[in-house]
Image (cartoon, rainbow, N blue to C red):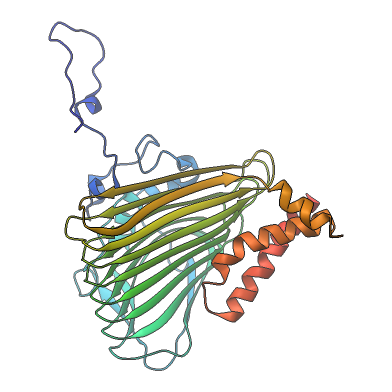
Length: 393
């Protein structure tokens, strides 16, 4: 345990009020509040903001009314899906979500009527629910609730395009026996700023697959937090990103094993090319004292394609019980494997084509987990275009 120390009474000089407090180091200890004033404006020295370019996201950290209509919303949903609006305090809004930072708190207060997307009990969707969000410029805050009721099955895709500065909360509830997939796709224009806080609870014998794909935007920070609350619940958290020059892509992932016999799988992969391309991944897994017989693993892999790109990767694992099936974490960041390139070129494949094959092979592991053929094809085409753009730069 870390304790704060005090200087002798005779000591003189500057006194930093913050020195009296022990900084929050683990995700489970972060304070939460619906009150914007409880957070203050970040300086960039806080543990959850120190990797984020504060100057580029500052408009989303100030509690000023945003413009309406900044992000146009179009929902395509199969028959049987329930859609309505939820006021603050109207269930299930707030059943799971508690803001962890000032941007999320502002989004909570400014979204007076949050949209609800609900898959009713026992319904199995044969097509995904697609929510297309198109930015038209300006600052916007949003809160959305996604609920799969008992034994429901379905997929929700959030597509972000155009340009905007948006702070977004996504509250996800997977009730007993349900199987829910939530995919957040960021294909913003290069000047967009996107701060998202996704918080989910997975109940007894339910499963949640959460996928974050970021290919566009100037600064994109999507922080998923998933609580495996019910016995036998399962959480799969996957991510894919491709950062170009000047782009900052970040995810702070938290998986909390709370119930017994829970299973967790976290895998994020990223590629970077171009001067000042930056990715940040922080993965926290907490296996709580009641999460007996848990099986959990988290990993982050990054492929740096050019000089000047930088990937930060910080995996953390905290275990509070000795009765687990298994737990582990891993991180790796590196350049092309020269032996792979040599092997392909020795068989008559040109260097550019060989590099393309290596990158596609590296990222396709995440693409193939999406389970929507049209979207998988779109992402593969987008990755090829990213590589071609980098080669011609």
